[in-house]
Amino acid sequence: MSKPKMMQLKGSKKVQKSELIESIKAMIDELSTVLEGRKLNLQELKREKQQYQDKISRVRQDINKHLDLLEEKVNQELGGRYKEASILIGNDIAEIESSLKVMSNYKNVLDTGLKNVSDIHVFLEMNKIKQQHSKRSELLKKRLKEIKHHEIEKLFEDKWVNLITNLTKIGTVTIRSTPLDVKSGKRGGQYLTDGIFVPNDKVLLVDCHGRKVIFCTLEGQVHKELSLSGDPCSIVQIDDREAAVVLCNTQNIQYIDIVNCKLGKLITVNKQLYQAIGYNGPNLIVRGTDGNIYMIDRTGNIIKTVTSGYNTYYITCTTDRIYLTSDDKLVCFDMNGSQMFSYTNDNFRNGQGISVDTEGNIYCCGFDSNNIHQLTPDGQFIKLIVTDITEPRGISFDKTGERFLVTHEPNNVTVYELQESV
Image 1 (cartoon, rainbow, N blue to C red):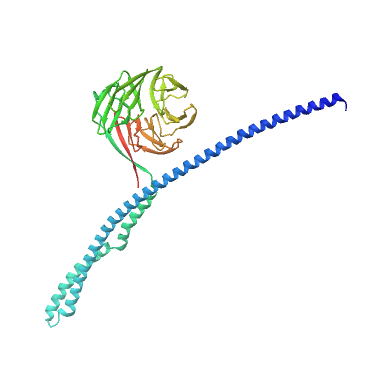
Image 2 (image 1 turned 135 degrees about the vertical axis):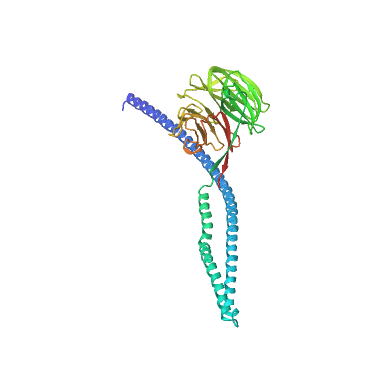
């Protein structure tokens, strides 16, 4: 082989080797990336497994608690029913024994008591016993029909039917409501659009038409009123000491000291704001009059803009989700502005206030449908938790998640308490 051809062959091999090395390196990089991704997937899988195990543990604790309450309730009911039935049976026994005594006395009189007496005396005495026996026999036959063993069994049977029903309802909740008749200023001008629970067993209500917020007790007695510089519509609690209310059609958000019941700082945002406000931990989430959702820091600087495409009425937030109502729909976004899900229902019309309990369940007010829907954290319908209400607007849970308040027509507020059913 000539020298130039040898040089050319060596050069070709060198190029091929270099290309092969690069290809292998690329494959190594890709494999490493995929491997790292799968390791992260495994870690996430382990975390998810632990989360579900923790949830199962909590469910077990809840079930044990419900079973303890159920056992106590059933024992009380069965004890009361047994006492009632045993008294009834005891009275029947006493009545039957008394009748037996009378019948035995008649028999003794006829067997031995009429010896050595005149026939006329025997005739008269037998006629007297016959009349008494005939009258008593009719009463006894009627009474004996009423005293039946299966009627006593039925008393217990009803309770066992109730027990089976109760067993199917372990862990469900019932609602107890307490209306607050809040009388503040001129009644005709009051329009309560939202509210929250605040320290010292009080609630803080938003009076849009009155341009004020109202601190009142859980009995509805007004404690203090604070006038505002604009029309408040929606309020959100920031922490144990502070809340914030958006002033509709202005650029302002008003902070409120909920411990000392006084106004705090007024901040200005470089956007015209509308009626909805939420809080996700570090930042406020508000709706602008342009329809956009703005993430704002505590001083009023806009951090992010979300174009929702919806006519937003109310907003509530968790650390990683934004919930809003728009017309006949509830919509959920993540904090990057990506829509996660939406909820509609034929019996959910003109959605207004939203709140989330400690388990992540969602509660949304149907203003025109006159009800409150309870949803799972993923937006699946659970139940109509409140139906006997007129035009509900704002809704808010306390920090325990055991009660919530609702502003509604006729221009008032009701506190609802969730109670476990057994």
